[in-house]
Image (cartoon, rainbow, N blue to C red):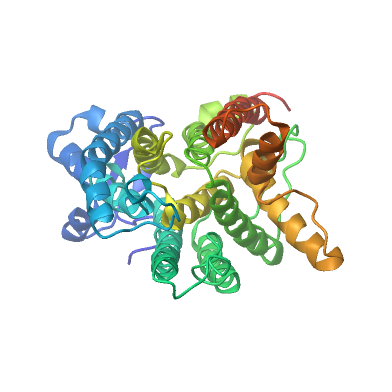
Amino acid sequence: MLSFECFRSEHIFIFWEQRELFPLISDKSLYLRTIMLIELLYQKTGIFLLYSRLFSTSLATVLSFSLAMLLFPFYINFLRKFGMSSELKDNKGAEPVMPAGILFLIITTLTALVTVRLNSYVISALVIYVFFGIIGAVDDVVKVVNKRKVVKGLLSKQDYQYKADGISATLRLSLYLIISFLVAAAAYEYIPNINGTINLPFVSILKKYPYLPFWLFIPFMTITIAVLANGVNFTDGFDTLAAVPCITSLLFVGVISFISSNTEWCKYLLIPYIPGLQELLPLIGAIIGTLLAYLWFNSPPSTIIMGDSGSVGLGGLIGILFVFTKAGFYLPIVGFIFLMEFVSVVIQIGYFKMTKKRVFLMAPIHHHFQIKMRNSGRYGGEFQIKSKIAWRFHILSVVLLVLGLVLFLKIR
């Protein structure tokens, strides 16, 4: 019988990095149908390099980057041919096309078929990423349709709101919460290490390792995934603005995943030991490689934008990875930019509904900075303003990555 948390069998093999037993399913033919290409090569050749998580992660990063660099030009031309843009600009040729997130999903899937070894962590992460990406893709398509209505005069520009013209916010949030809840409940039930324990900043697990019961942990996991999906989506407002914080967040959970799956390192650093978490590394590497290639084409002035299919999917994925690494309480540090964008929207909407006044000049908060810098008159134009904001956000995300790693690994 195939268990969700692991494959059970008398057949075993050795983790190359940590020399620990990992069960496989008993039926060999079924096993060969479930393993990925790199694992099949390892089984056939016995070359331990093919089993190394660092090698498969590096391979996934380079392969996804190469695929993205190869496919993006064709994909951009394809989207431009069909007018896939939600931007309202006078110069049609200057319009960046969308959504890049669909190509993200394709490249990640292709790379996973080569490098990723499926286990419950990988499956859960992929479910969130794919379903959230599909929701975002539908939203992107509706935006393009509405933009065409504006061009034809069937819809006024006032009624066309770039961030809310697709699927209604209520429906999107409901779908986020439902999918997150189902995945969280399944993970809690079938993955032994998803047991409600939380790692707190500044506190050693030997002194305090709090446990959240089922009725608290499931909402915590659900809300974390949904909030990050919205937070990354709100951040994706300027060229490259969301991509770099996504990369730094993925680097954080990648480092934690690698270290947390090694018993000796966990004992030395006093962090939770989570076997099987290292299987997420090639998936994380594949997404980072794709994002690096995306930055090549999204660098100002952008040729293609991420769209909700990219930002929502990546946000949901990052959220569940923080939960899997038991680093949920480090999210306000490493993912500060995403939470700042999300909270600014919540405050703006809530305060306006209560008082008919605004806290920020415009939300999300990067638009507040944009208007403030524009009003100062010290900048030559919108290009300089957006570039200045984006670079400052990028620098902040790198600093927060370093701070988060230091706090998680050493300061207790």
